[in-house]
Length: 233
Image 1: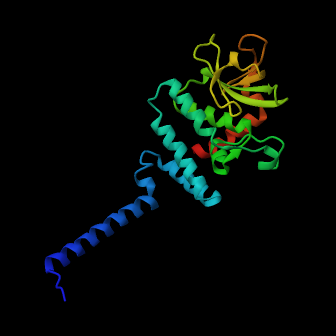
Image 2 (image 1 turned 90 degrees about the vertical axis):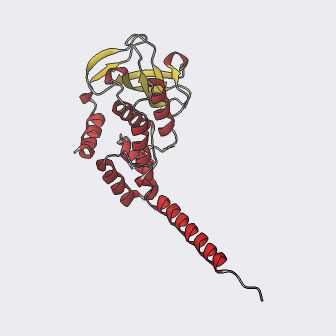
């Protein structure tokens, strides 16, 4: 019979204890990732994410927290990087028609509703990108939500346009053609009208369009902003 020394036994026990501590740490990181991954997210959005999780499940909660992480981590990026990251982030979600998703012919979802349900139509993609870029400090005057006709699909569509300068050709953020391109390269889109937080324009063949009043004339836009206000209180 071979005898194992006390030193050897002590070493084995010590190694087992170290392994247990490492396993416990790994489990802790998996169970409560918000302690480190989401450290900069405000208490308000933690509460919103938890509410979303209770209604739509843990994956929905994670999507909302990932959105807030994107906002926190993108504050100091260049404008090109902000546009790219926001466009790519939301383009991961699924296209679902309003009638199938909400049981309505037309419904403009808030970014949280869009993320919670992991899908929406073209308006929802555009709205989520618009509000996220506004939160990242992009001035409203440089952004427009543009209602267009997608000529290849022969149907109405919405995209987001970013104007570097008032007279510049805008860059288009779209969920159909996921690559950002200048409007001059999007001959498949025929502009109808555009708007931002304050104004509404009818599109012209050339130029930025004819100002026809405030965006409050759009009932769906007003309804959307009223629902958004509930998250900001």
